[in-house]
Length: 124
Image 1: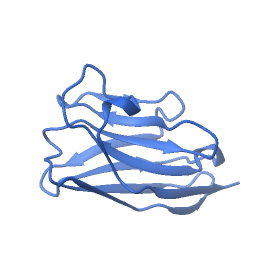
Image 2 (image 1 turned 45 degrees about the vertical axis):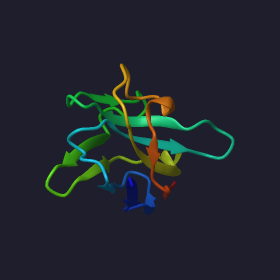
Image 3 (image 1 turned 45 degrees about the horizontal axis):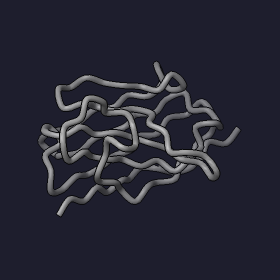
Image 4 (image 1 turned 60 degrees about the vertical axis):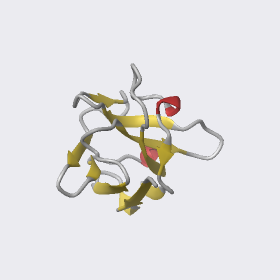
């Protein structure tokens, strides 16, 4: 059974930083693609950062230079370091893992397993 458990969300002022963690069980983070997505009410879930099976990284234009995705193989955990946060970064953040290889790794449809989500709120 695959489980993804996010932690680290919260309330932060604009310009501040937060680090999210996604602890994975049932899959090795070194062997799957992992993604961080976010969603706000009435909007589609979007990928903000993703890590492919071969280690390539994807970042949404809106977060480039501010967010960093990484993985700790020993802890089987994936992180999302967020800096220079803006009010528009406010959302529920989800981590995801794939089950099978696909050519892309930054679409919702590329992923099979999802965490429960963690709220990030950035105040102005």
